[in-house]
Length: 356
Image (cartoon, rainbow, N blue to C red; front, side, top):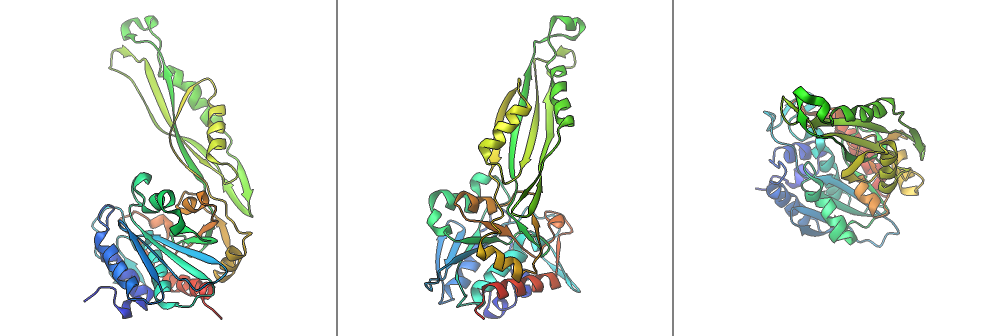
């Protein structure tokens, strides 16, 4: 008997628990993808396509607009928090907050709203919790972007039921200093690369982060050292040292502008970009977004982290984050989600997509 029965698909809480009780640590999403695929294929109003362990489903009703609902299927590794347990109005366990409670809402809408007021697409994807190169949504954005086409997207990441618009970009750079090795007993014969790091840290300590308003959302940038290293041995003057710096940038900068800013801050030093991901504008000026914010209670704020909404931004699709989980509980051993929060988010989504 299938885990995702018709009765389970009809109840967002039961569906959340059912998805959470299917193990799906990154790289091991085949079982949960099989279950979701089987459930989707029983629904006559959707067409489905599977690419690896990523599923795309869609309605084709000829509506004038299309909205995408997206959620990842994978979790971080188990930490003595699997399977789920229910305690009153709280469901405890791996994935309950990040983000199977949100993914369940997308699947619930797919199953229970056969004639939405605009066409819907659904993305259930793998490998979100690991390196970006393996991310199923990232792969589709590069190889099959037509599958992600939409006028607006909702990523059902944990936001505790509040619309979080857009996201910051993130960039990691390595700032390196060079010196000359020497015996520490004759240090004047060398040049200490670690000592040359001091001005880098001074610039970081003096850095004043911008606060930027984009589409009525306030984003606060940040430039911070996250790793530092150098040294050869306890009796050697080091000839190289480095600091890894993370820059979180507002959606009014693209990656090129972010890199130019970082290089300006560290002018005179060797700077190498090691990783970067784009920001995403809120897009709240779009009618689809305004309608959704109203359906979700009218409140919104900036997303101060990075999420896969940025994948949609690269395709020119505005996107917001919205889900029942508490982002502060993501990846924690005591991960949990409140049942009333699931039902409230479910009601908001249904009010948004359903014909009245």
